[in-house]
Length: 332
Ligand SMILES: NC(=O)c1ccc[n+]([C@@H]2O[C@H](COP(=O)([O-])OP(=O)(O)OC[C@H]3O[C@@H](n4cnc5c(N)ncnc54)[C@H](O)[C@@H]3O)[C@@H](O)[C@H]2O)c1
Image 1: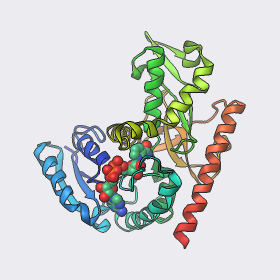
Image 2 (image 1 turned 90 degrees about the horizontal axis):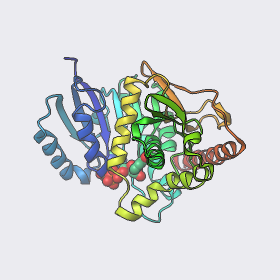
Image 3 (image 1 turned 60 degrees about the horizontal axis):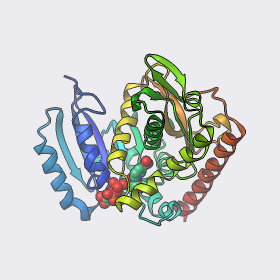
């Protein structure tokens, strides 16, 4: 069996981590034959709760879980890690806008960027889940100059999964028959969920979702708004933000990054923008990507109509504003 890899999860005493830690431990992300040592970071007041999480992980009796290191010290948490799930942040509460969150959260990601820079492996793959995820990932990478910028990503896989599920329901097909829905831009209500290139596999033949569904009005309005507002809808119903589905998406994102995309398939990841599709450069923008050998590449050549271009501009503008606000907070 392979040597164990070290994986850090921050916010380890929180609700997303509670589902995610089990998924990682049982091999959903790195495979059933890859042993892992989990590093669990949370803040000092949560160390008691974290102790309970450690007890439960031990009690799962999973052979490939080779060790658990609970800590409130970023230097310990990030030591020699190959993968980092940065979940810990202040969660959005009902009625709270993303901008309120930004000031509270960017400082956390500066400290964690510095700790990654000092202590993590230089090829560490970093997934930021804590909101505002795109801008947090940008700040984190700025404070970790010795780690390549392409190793910092933000999660829009939950939005992608929501979109796949919504389309599968609309055409009454299994969710794994639908592929290539794209989430463009920010993980926020300005994101653009785009089904124009999505496909569905029907009895081994591939069809375009737009042609199968024959309902452009639904795709351009209800579908887009449902996905944009899904996070808020879950909060309104559960009085807490999405957790089980967020953990599943984080696990999907990292699995794809480590193990690659299937031929003909692409997934959405928030990655450092090179200006593709007219997006602003140097923000973490969600694009369709393929992954091979642990490296992502932005899918080129997808067609965007005028409405889509306007949606990309809106979400890109928001990311530029967030970057500006984050820099003001951090440089103050
Ligand atoms: N990108 C997405 O799709 C997506 C989806 C759902 C939730 N989220 C975000 O994920 C984050 C976590 O959500 P949750 O429901 O697990 O929240 P939670 O409040 O249950 O848990 C967050 C944990 O982070 C810890 N924490 C706070 N500051 C920390 C720090 N500096 N270092 C380490 N740990 C720290 C807290 O003590 C807490 O235990 C939130 O920001 C939420 O908005 C993102």
